[in-house]
Figure 1 (cartoon, rainbow, N blue to C red):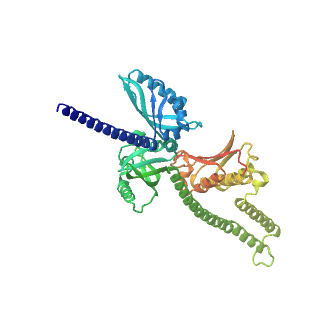
Figure 2 (figure 1 turned 180 degrees about the vertical axis):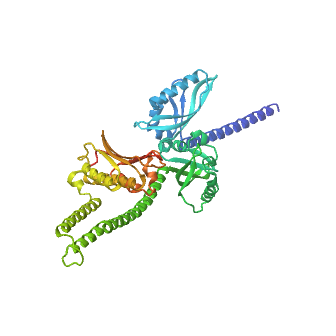
Figure 3 (figure 1 turned 60 degrees about the vertical axis):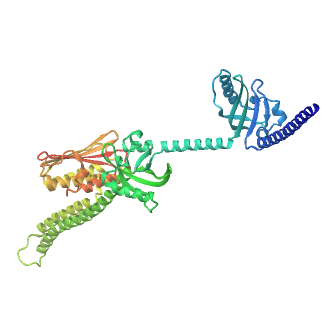
Length: 508
């Protein structure tokens, strides 16, 4: 009876041992299963994974992706040090990090390094390391790496593109503005210079600071419609306010972009002040041309009328008198008759007078004396003729100017001085008139001066008095045609001085 309790106890122990062995077998099976799953997960993970020993620096284990990344076999990697995959720059950076780790300092567990594969290809990886410590001393590490070469190339391309864009925008000769929620969130240096501000003085401020008050409502409505996607002008002319308060004529070229996830205006602003000035001058020139054309027609008509009057009053009367004298000399004419000799002599005198008048009128119409004798002789003749006609004492002094200019320039000089003399005869009531020419380096100055009654003018450009009715517009246009300039000095009771400045290099 005593042996049964012992047997029962032994059988119990055996069953417990069997259960334990069975449980251990299950555990080992689970461990093998977990290990297989771990290795499968490790090798199929979308990242390189390896373990390394801190003292030797060698790989302890590597997964399949690590083999694919590096181009080495598993056996080759397990015989290598981790640092063997690093480029020179990476070795320097990682060495500094390891020194800090050995010194007990904490280092970043995430980093981006450049590594080199077996075939020499360099590529970027993102690295996450977990260090293994034993007695507070690092003994190894587990590392996960991702190939980020494409991302780095994309980032580099983006940075390069941004640098090019910024350089382009910063150096642009047009103003560039981003307007978001009616605020200037970006302006380039050109726009700041255009408006008289510094860049930092504009960015972040309301656009109203640089828009004339009366234009703000219409521009704001255009801005809102454009952001809503409605049809709106993208290129149009407007104005901006300079810091000093003056207006600037500009042209807007506006597009819609995304800024902070919302629509915004990207505007290119071009200063068209010079263009507007040229357009204004062109319009004024066209108006002046039309005015001069009208004046020319009136001048031609006036000259025809003057010529008609001269032909009628002088030549007509002379010819009528000559006709009467010839009739008187006719023996068949009734009444007392003068002697033939006397009638013939008087007739010859009248014929000479008629011929002289014809020559004068002809020269007035076309001064052939210019071609025959030169500018000095032509001006002397014009001044003598003026003196006889108006009973005014004249004086002329010319330098050596006859061979300076072409025939066209000489004609215009002659006509300008002729018109000046005509004005003096009509308006000045002068007693003395002088015409002088002074040759200077690079130019010749003609001066026509009288001691007449003058007028309220001062020394100004003749263009301001083109509509004075004194023929000054025609004189101005003639001067412009030959690249010359005209100035007038005059004052009531002090006579008038007209200066014509002509470059001596003209050979039109």
